[in-house]
Length: 183
Image 1 (cartoon, helix red, strand yellow):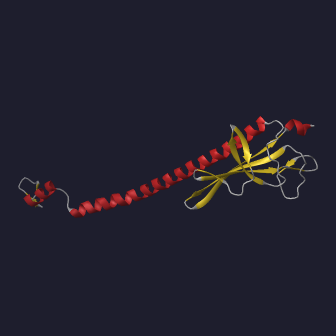
Image 2: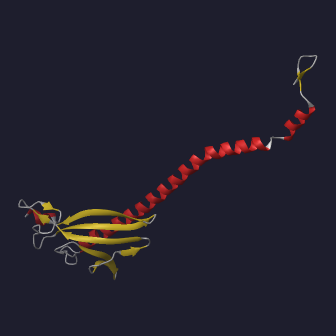
């Protein structure tokens, strides 16, 4: 840079022309590289959030499916006060709810879960054991099961594959005739 008589810096005509023409290729490459390095973590985080959202949405749908199966069992229990169509196996047994002639019933014991879209569902019905005080206990082989008991545990399970890994959700509940237990 040269100084003029007035004391102001003098810019060469070549430099002024280059400033008017734009940036050099090197400057553009540096800026693009820096922006790329800044953007990569944000893009990675957004991708992970998207996968988590999909995973939660699929799990929520599976949970809803398991709840629907329990609702079917509740409807069956309420529609037949004597529980005549509710199976009471002596060991845990898998069933599938089946709608026939506008009435819900249990499909015979199944060996493979029922497919509902990408999900596999089943209802496991097992007896409830009682200790010497009459308290209800989870089923274990050899536990004392009261014969004719109207107490069963129902486990509704929905399974699916997520990124080639099996996932599942289970909802457990106990159905019992409280008034009968009180006597």
